[in-house]
Length: 461
Image (tube, rainbow, N blue to C red):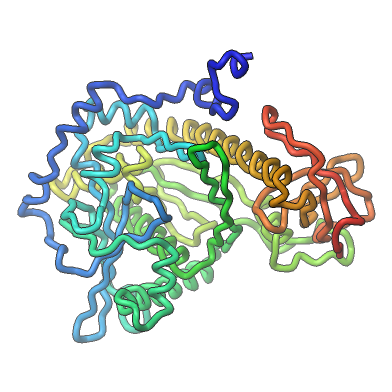
């Protein structure tokens, strides 16, 4: 009725209305954002000047809120010094200010296919706080030295000033890694080798490698969605992931060793000794969707607390999140905690204050994730519906069976898209089978696509 009355558009993200997600910033927060002066902090003599080191940001195309950058320096002895630089947003935003209170209220940036609802105004998130190419920016830098065997020699955390020399997309970074003639090859290729060694050591420590592809859904100004499937396993994506894990784990060690109140994330290592034992006789896990699904079902949720504990899923002894201060409020808090200690030798937040933010964030971030998933589901189903109507897509899709139990709809994963669906199947179809499904109908209001088994419309195994 409200759509018919013109109150809402057909694609209106009603989830924002239902959950009370604010899209406009209070004037007090906007005033403070406009008044942020990063030049004073850049001129701080207590910051290490790293602007001469070749530094690069690597992000998805279209990213404007650049939290992190990487640099590499090699000395005459063959020692590699990797710089992991996180924008020092905590210094730009005063604790208890209107801007800080609003960031706390929002807790994180909300990424929807049709729009972004930022945690911080653009004056900070995409301008003064973002590691934009060619601009000096204050940062909290983790400097890690590696020997020629890619073993960590030592590391330190320091307030710094950095300057990004290039803003690359993941695709451009992949090209730089593989192309020996690329201007960034001599920086990114060694970084990728070091990241691969870090990943191997984490896997030896029990880390799980779950590389399900992701869907990038965008919506043009005419309200038409476009879908790109992005593999997580490209060299540059794995490289950035490894250095962010390294940064968060070493920052956690920094807090643990100095007894700084911190929000530690931990997870029990899953027992994979009987992985696949619940499958029907003759069914093999393989290395695809069925294996991924079987492992995910055995994972316990990550826990958050103020006592350090191992993160089994990542294969590290301690872990915090401090690498996305423009996009996640708990990261901003942890960055402030570390920065204050570096400057004064004292923490900014008490254990109770850290715990309060962490527990509120745990609940609120789950809610934001549900909204993001709901909107992705809506736009993906609309993409399928419009594509089939226009003749650009077939209405038949290959799908991998994940679970098929009697008297229940089967659980499946589309082969060409990382998207979970349900359908009624004969009991003779087993987990791991790849079958054909036809999209019978789409109900966008309920976010539901009705898929039916179509054995005569595609090859099955």
